[in-house]
View 1 (spheres, helix red, strand yellow):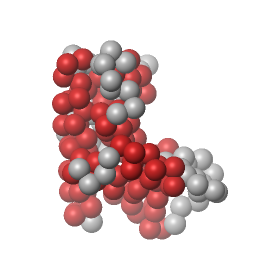
View 2: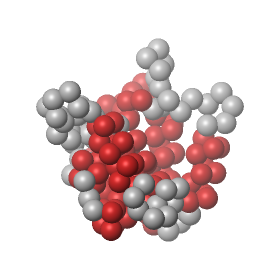
View 3: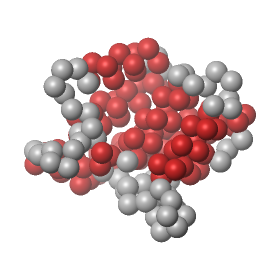
View 4: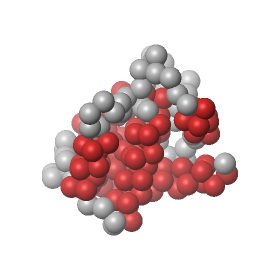
Length: 153
């Protein structure tokens, strides 16, 4: 069985969310990782690979921020400020079952990748000393795959 959003192999009765919790448990063993760039890269990568729970505008903002952090154009404080600004007022970040999307937003989600060269499963079983590097490679793969999908549209 495979995740319908990212393509990761799933055990019977398992989910990518289980892998994500495993990743966070691994991160908790890495001194100083929580709340830093590796944490942001991990959360952003996971969320971008599981887009169906998010509004398209939130995904677009997260995608830009991920690219900016990877390229050194944004620091972790910038990422936090952007996330806060993106959720101000009545702006929805999470998508509900009754959310109505524009044709443009629906087209964006339809074109979103469903197969990725690397997923949370490839990172959650890393050794603690490999965590930061593995997360950066994963985030770079996510950014590249999204760039390629956009170029193909």
